[in-house]
Length: 93
Image 1 (spheres, rainbow, N blue to C red):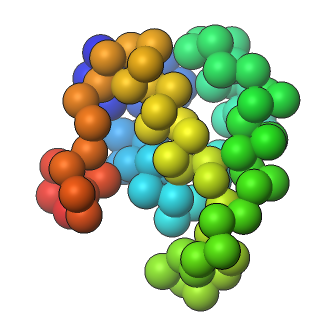
Image 2 (image 1 turned 45 degrees about the vertical axis):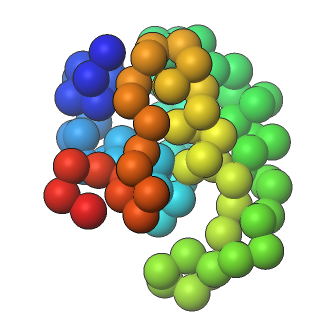
């Protein structure tokens, strides 16, 4: 499944999904519920990833969490999306 298809299922722009995958942003609670409903990733696991700090900082200077990496791992496993190339999180990064 392509990122565009995942975004359509979730009712968000594909750029939003790329922000989540990169760790630059995390989804709202409503979006987490939609992710569980449409993709099958339980909110409990999403919150665990969101609450796990990596020790780094986001590009905005905030503490980085594990949500992006965990979301990508889930999508790679369950929906066979291609793994990100080193240093890339989307088609134009």
